[in-house]
Amino acid sequence: MKVNAGDLSVLGSMKSHASAPGKIILCGEHAVVYGRPAIALPLTGIRAHAHITGSAPGSGIRFNAPDLGRRWLLSTTPGDPLSELTLTTLQQLGITGMPDVEITITSDIPIASGMGSGAAIATAIVRALADAFGRNLSAEEVSSLVYESERRYHGTPSGIDNTVIAYERAIWFQRRSEPPHLIEPLPMTAAFTLLIGDTGVRSATRLPVGEVRRRWQEDPARYETLFDMVADVVHQVRQALQEGDLMALGPLLNRNQDLLEQIGVSSPHLERLIAAARAAGASGAKLSGGGWGGVMIALVELDVAMQVRKALLESGATRVLETTIGE
Ligand code: PMV
Image (cartoon, rainbow, N blue to C red):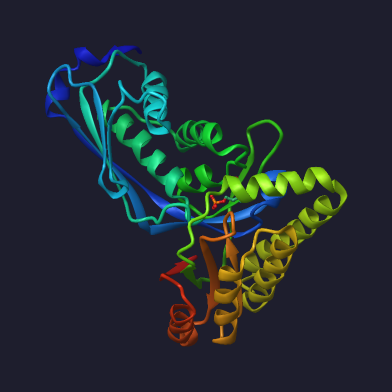
């Protein structure tokens, strides 16, 4: 059903809000861009929010992002990624004409750190727009709107970020050459705790992703072998989680880190935090996400969590978050 935004008398009093979680990749990043499986986990306690309120007739769509220090009008900045996402979403919702609304975006998720900040902000906006117009979008629809937006600005994303964030559950993800990609809930029989250490070094995902592509083009045989080795680790992680074999998990995360170093996406900052976490008693640690900066994760038993957190902070982590998965 098509609806003209101007016909909606509710707009003046409109108020809607939606949020979306951050995420981390447990294992399989980068290889996932080349069709291998990866495991991603939502961080439900750390979120991006979009609030929509109706505004004066004729004012159009105004964005307000205080955390990013930005305000803009869709009509004067139509090429902004979030302006474009908003237009595509309104189109998908069957809204013609321009509603008069203010979209306020806030987020607790550090940007360019491998925690899915961009995809979470986009997801919150899509959901808040659907809610504002009394529509329902499935997780799959939300995910594909966000994917299109990420694809335009980030090169060749695998689709794992938008998927884990839109579904908000632990997923096994494998990209296929054509959608639908393989998305499965991850069976887990035991809970485990991760510390997430932020290097404080911001790194846009498309840079390491672009460099890996360049190296893969230069030496496809070597990179295909490395990606197969990552896939093997990811399959073993899945089995360990399914069997509740947490003893196996730490060494597998370490093995994934070794392979990420060989792929060329680690960094001295990441390796310093990873070494500190292992030395303080973490049973495994690796970078998470695009690499070259951003965050690392450490698997910890509760009795060493405090000392690992302390070691991370003493080694330069700008913040340390804790998350328990599978409860
Ligand atoms: O957005 P990030 O930094 O968490 O990285 C996503 C994971 C990559 O595998 C590096 C890229 C992708 O699109 O899957």
